[in-house]
Image 1: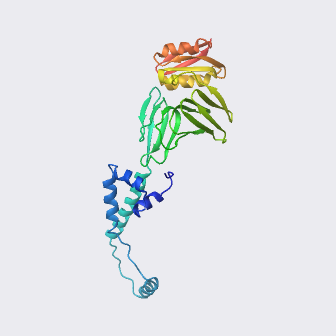
Image 2 (image 1 turned 30 degrees about the vertical axis):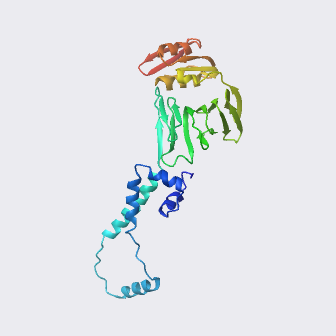
Image 3 (image 1 turned 120 degrees about the horizontal axis):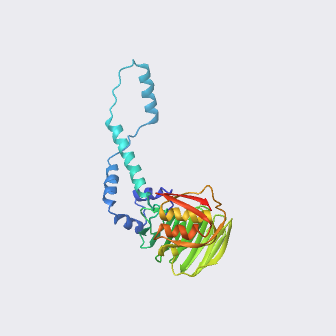
Length: 300
């Protein structure tokens, strides 16, 4: 429907010009009665009319008269302020957003207003507009999530590095630092980079951003591995692997003494921290000491 900054929506409602479909959606909201009371109250507030010429003459006459002490009546001013505040409140409610954030080590299942579902991976944030979702199915993602989108109007996932657009499908989006990876598990999706490169993915297709270029790839699993409690890497810098360990286990690495640019191929599971650390660090020739949530790394 409208963009987040399009306040003409409120004007249309107040002027009885709202589209019947959106008006019906508004009336079905539990907050509608409260909105209606505020708007009905505005009908009793009328700005005083005045003639500009008469007002000027009156002002000049008063300037020639001796000055008298002034008495300020606050009630009309306070009423006007309350009306303005009510309008601002309505605007805020209309264009307010819902945000979901997961902490390190935490995953979250989300159901969107249209019935689409999102599995949000650790240390990720997803947001969307609170109301009037049906005509503008758009979410913003920072992190990683798996989407099952119901059929309907275009559904968009916007990230800092690219955009994914679909009609109804299942796909995974990863947006971590300079990583942007999309995998299609069902249906068809269109992926666009911030450099306006585009790729169409069908089931089993994937694409990743390397530098400023989208590189096609393939997926063989029926769902993302992180949803089954595992992460796999193929010639990835060790720094990215350690970042993922920190997110999944809510730990912090002291990694100043090791080479984080060396490449790692392998994986770890999310069930046992010690096993995960051994799976990654021992093959890389790295020793570690765990002290609470801090893990200090050093070369052998």
